[in-house]
Length: 162
Image (tube, rainbow, N blue to C red; front, top):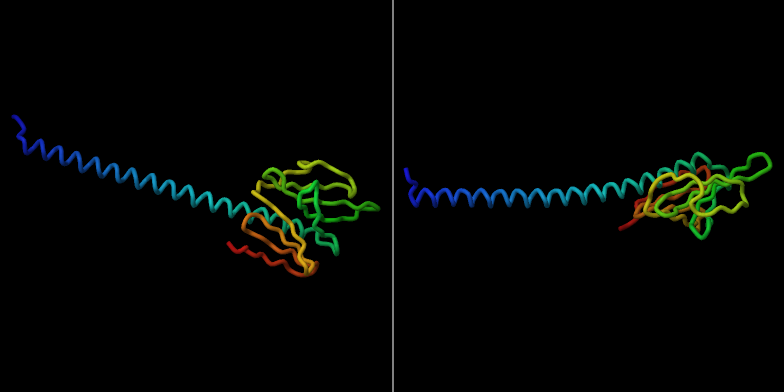
């Protein structure tokens, strides 16, 4: 049996509708995958900032002796110094950011070390420390920040304004 013109046209129309539907499904999947990738990336970035500041906050609170915290520079990089007296010597725990990593260096005060010395702790886009006029210290990583209050007071996590 031979197919008539009407049957061929019907088959062609069905095939065209199927192809259009397949292209639309493929387009929606591509757009959804791109949106998902952007959401996951933004979530990961925010998470890294919070984990970085959580590490710094925990380190400070575990070593929070009177007058032991101060902000300084470590080879021209903003750094947090935590002083600790052991025997007759003073030691520093120095937390700083270098080449995408947060480092922690524990060393006797007064010795010079190059950037990159110490233990790599966590990857972070940035980490800065700033002395505040009220004596507190502000730590900023990306768009997230936290204050370290004076000994005996609680620090207040603060999301910075976008």
